[in-house]
Amino acid sequence: MTPPGVALSRPVILAVSRLPPFLLEPLQAAYVVHERLHETDPAAFAKAASGIRAVVGGGESKVPRALMDQLPALEMVSIFGVGYDGVDVSTALERRIPVTHTPGVLNDEVADLAIGLMLSVARCIPQADRYVRAGRWASEGAMPLSRKVSGARLGIVGLGRIGQAIASRAEAFGMSIAYTARSAKPGVAYSFFPTAQALAAQVDFLIVITPGGAGTRHLINAEVLQALGPGGYLINVARGSVVDEAALVQALQQGVIAGAGLDVFEKEPHVPEALWALDNVVLTPHIASGTRQTRQAMADLAAANLAAHFAGRPLLSPVPEWG
Ligand code: NAP
Ligand code: 8YV
Image (cartoon, rainbow, N blue to C red; front, side):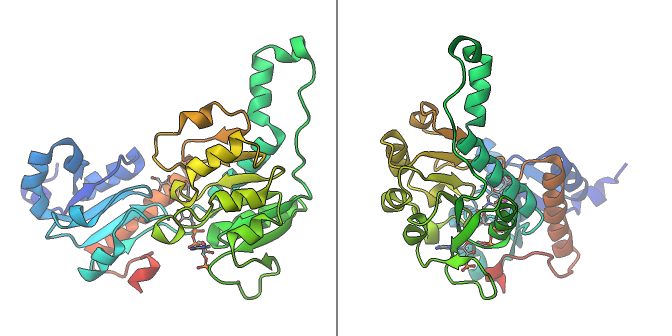
């Protein structure tokens, strides 16, 4: 058993989101972990706050200035995810608090789901499943025909780590690939378009995989959807904030685009009921990295960043703003 004195000397950390047991348990062995105390028990949080030295949370976590201001001893933020748009990085940088994330280890998984959503919505796989279960095959006969994916034109919004993993999968489907990003990528053979709208006008499928946050808010708006057109499909595996959800609902309802595959939403876990009602959309609850294997790899990296910090070793994967 750990002697009480040793237990007291463990660094105190705050988990700002619900963590899986394979991350929470190793953290509890090394640290005193307050699980979402700031939300569940503000009075206890007020007492504990001055001793909290690190914050840990998933990619959707909110770590605003208001929270950091209550944590005078905060030394680092470790995000269990690659996206960190919920973290006020400028405040962290001002206070010389490093922020780490988990890039790379989830590329395959997120790319797989992007392709899965594209196939699902184009080939109507969930709709077909519902058709069989409802007995409609027997009573109504064959389903309406769907849309071919192989050989079609794919546009990728954000050709970073995950965007490139999506592109290499799409190559195997014989798709022609084009992309937009903040800048053209040297040495990349895919066609570059300077805006999402110009890209959308040239493709059948538009997959969005940029970071969230102020720089990409509503990058996919009514004009982009108009450019994608009545034969086009939108897939969003980035962040809900990147797509103007009200404009998307309207575009789907009015046939401005053909369909959408969505893993992320503006107000998670709330998905507009207007989307539930539409048969030309496939909806998943932010599961793109959600396999046991990949979440374990993310957990290991998030924990290793914390361990490196408290051992005075270099961080494994600080966010790019950290330099
Ligand atoms: P990354 O390597 O940093 O790539 C991001 C790409 O987005 C880069 O090509 C970047 O362009 C582009 N981009 C950034 N701002 C843009 C803008 N304003 N307009 C157009 N393109 C822009 O990131 P990653 O590892 O691929 O991850 C991307 C994002 O996916 C994460 O930040 C996260 O939000 C999301 N994600 C979601 C899930 C999920 O569960 N659904 C899982 C993992 C990740 P430049 O190269 O020109 O800078
Ligand atoms: C996870 C994510 O859902 O990596 C990201 O940015 O959004 C996802 O991988 C999340 O990090 C787990 O909480």
